[in-house]
Image (cartoon, rainbow, N blue to C red; front, side, top):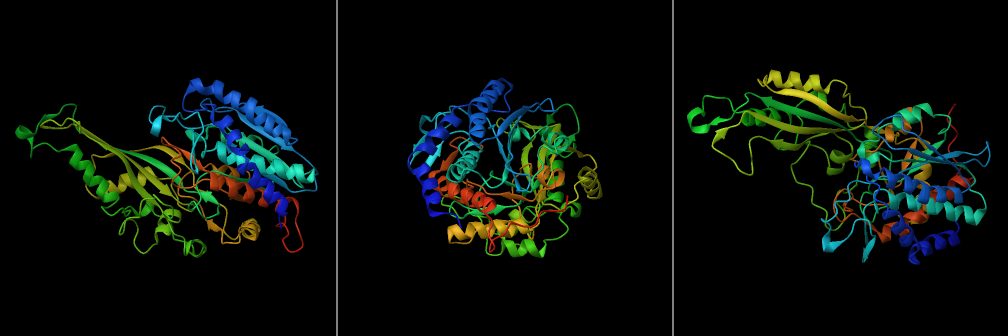
Length: 468
């Protein structure tokens, strides 16, 4: 059980304003990975913020070039206390999305952390600087109290998560020994809701798909040619409807997961989606029938239309357009075979008379998850519930994306994600914010897991090491 004075120290770090001040210093660096000109800010953040924090934890710190030309550098902090101790791998990302300056409410500056009640506004406050600050601070408090962690620590930071983590998989594959560990504990993404401590074990994957109908270079007068020339927009609408119907149900069998596993169904029983004030309500009758909202979001696949265009919708003219395009995305869970998505959709459309629709896959990120029955899952859940005094939600994966597959599939690790944000944080939009209450609880939860890892007991032992 975590000592009471360690809980008090964790809470005092937030209550005193020290956490806010540290986060403000981090937010001030405009580490936008989608902008090549931000590389200077990225390097400064690594050198001036993260390296001193890792050094203070007794880590040796090294930076590594990215094997992918589109990606930024990696930073690794390593503290080895004993070869006989378990090794923890932590992860965070130093980059953020576009700051979207000028679009924030009340004249807020994305690079200046500002408080409005419990909301702390700033780009990166929730994704991901506030989250890795929670974990770094919890490790620092534990080390100060004990003089040692009781485990070995490897902390990996990447600088391109917001642009798809280019080079991360290749880096991990080439540095397996450097990153060798027993378990990953990391923080990103949202909790189930603002009030519910959450563990999730992976992420859904995504496949981005273009549907193009390119029939002719010119547009023709709709009065003179209507009823004679095929309309590409109408054709595209019919093609989309044959793939996903008007109630959001996938109609291409090859795009569906094989089944909803009983373990996933059991884990999601009683889980409520959209439990925070201000969340939109799930639409009745939308998505796969026979599933709860939680099962549709965390345990099933969806095919979403992200963009749709033909002609000039803002200034339409009386003409049949020559082309139409739609951007679709398949969000899919682990166990779905997506190796032939392009072929499956092409054949499906052809069978439904849409031979003139061109299908192309233009992006993909993998799905992955740690099994719900992995011993580390029960260990973490039990550790957290000892200190929370309330149930901890365990999700098989989040609905969104993370590079979880790098840790499960390449490094072979069980993955435990302890998020310190919530679905309404506006993480990729203006007014991104962290909740002070989540930061306060989050640092206690993180300290609890790290303390349990370094102080196993007879009634709460660590899982047995995996075979080498």
